[in-house]
Length: 107
Image (cartoon, rainbow, N blue to C red; front, top):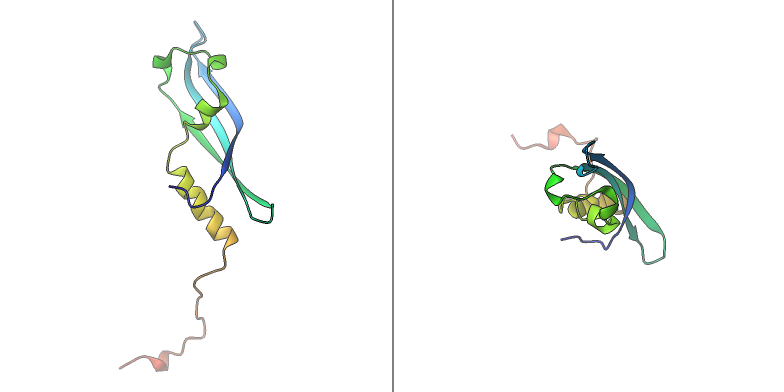
């Protein structure tokens, strides 16, 4: 489950279709995840995804909705976005001690 509420926006969608009838076999999509801070500023990250084996749906590209395509994103992308958000927006919780004195080690 996501730690940070996000808005997901479909940025790109390219279907691969059967030539004979236009039925979608796969989608290459890109979705932008955006978190809005309390001060109104936003932080976004874009993620690509390919969803294949869709012939069973028997749909042409215009039969899909933007929300259906967004819903094809892997469920773990919320967790990945959270990790990227924290890495770029939260203060560091660790530091490297480069001046460590080796003589302070126990014998």
